[in-house]
Amino acid sequence: MSRSKGLRKVNPPARTDRDALITSWGAKVDSELLELALTHRSWAFENGGVPTNERLELLGDSVLSIIVTDRIYHDYPNMSEADLVPIRAAAVSEKPLAEIAKTIGLDEFILLGNGELVTDGRNKPSILSDTLEALIGATYLTSGLAEVRGVVERLTMPYVKEATEAGPALDWKTSIQMLANDGKLGDVSYEIVGSGPDHARQYVATAMIGGRAWGKGEGTSRAKAEIAAAEASYDMLQKEMNA
Image 1 (cartoon, rainbow, N blue to C red):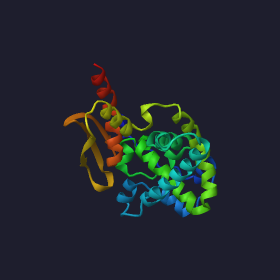
Image 2 (cartoon, one colour):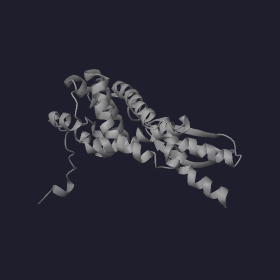
Image 3 (cartoon, helix red, strand yellow):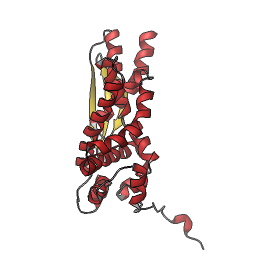
Image 4 (cartoon, one colour):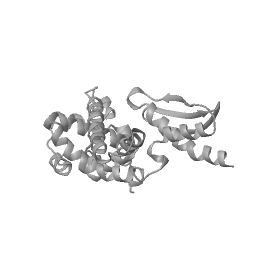
């Protein structure tokens, strides 16, 4: 009698042929820094609390921001600060970074704990974008700003171009606050509830406008949850104001 129907799905391990990742990435990365960049907190937690990629992620986020800001500053000299800020935000946000990570095959190399593996962690935008930022940080420490700039610009400039043609989605929090101002509803605030263990914290934000609860959003950080809540609330508020 076959027992295959009762077997639990086995998730594939992370790929180990990292030379293929470096080729796809297009820049040198120190092997130890690469290992660290690929180490998600779930894997670190299940393996004795080894260092995670979160410090590299912080560094990479800053490096990414300065590169993209510098590029759009020079490419769009006639745009105001108010125009450039949402363009930068859209180009370096979770969605495009996750798409870039998938494009270069980064998802296949991330070291994830069993909990994330069984919940399809390799396809979670938050994990993909955070790991890409960590890879940027590792590249910066390995080869400096000039080399990482070439990689970042090659991968992000198509999204910058798309961002210049976008509307409210450029910056949901700014857009909904402007909408609330138009309706003289006052400031937008966010009520946030966190849940889960420290290594897998999740947040739910509720947009509050004029003392009333509007849309909700989820994220792995307070900021991401607020952006999601603002996006969820924008159309709701716009329809009510136009009714």
